[in-house]
Length: 204
Length: 218
View 1 (cartoon, chains in turn orange, purple):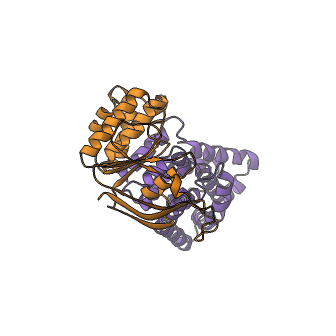
View 2 (tube, rainbow over the protein chains, first blue to last red):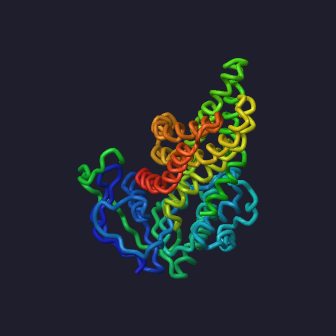
View 3 (cartoon, rainbow over the protein chains, first blue to last red):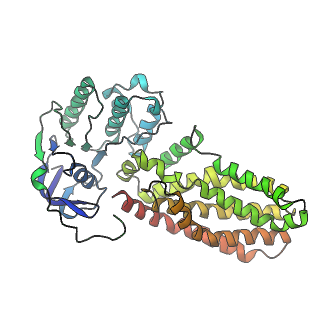
């Protein structure tokens, strides 16, 4: 079992957003999150990635198993593509960027500054970071924004390879990635708009 | 941790990295003070340790808001928080980078600028020593302030107001050490106090900084 979520409630800014979420994610499985804008998909993913405290419930997964990719790619404009990737590879202790470069066709761009890339190329570099983390559970927030059709297809292939290697993925997206995935619609879990009791004052 | 240090140093020296901002400010202050005070080397000599310390402190303050703001804006702070690197280690590296790019150049430049301010000869060693010992505390305290204001747009004003009172003890003992050294008095008390402040901040503040970063990322 890669990740198990029981009766999870998530909050943002002291307001309860989603509650009563239950799902299981096993190795080799992909789960796609659906829901309209503002329904709490990002908040749920940030909570699963450990960036936000949970409001209620339980998340069970191995320590250091989640790789998170957000709307922003965390790229340094003044570093080259290679330097950006090598930085994350050494932070995550994997050290090898060849597979990531190959999967996202970054070879011709390696020496270019990240600031000089197009939006889609930046996104590809941001997603390539997932491969250098070496972590089994990918938590992805709208990963296909600004990717062209071909890049989306390649990204789908990368996820398939990841799943076949025993990884799993949790993806918030509105488009079809061409991978066999279960769908979790977050709309039914919407919490009643009451203020969150364990509010910690000034820090929201 | 070394990777983060190397990346930040590399970013600092590339275009737009802000390396040299603090040093340039320090140079300007120390060059202009003799003009504004006038040609009274006696007066200059007596205010030199204080002016040099004040200039160094303000130069440090100038570059504080960049410590976390850039990483926050491009999302890499979120990614660092989910990386295996402990946040305490990350903020310590940030403080070290700030010291290497801002504090250390000031320490090296200060004796040269002491000449402009007619600092007595015996004071150079003490000025160098006091800055070498005191500027790490400025960077570590400043990193804490930057962590407190990380999510705020234009948080520079709030940052300065929060950090300045915390800088006061370092300024008092640092300038006192340099002044006593310049006039040939006993320097042991301010030296020990300054060293105590610096080592205490280095030991304790990274934990506070990483705690507030985690809260600010929520």
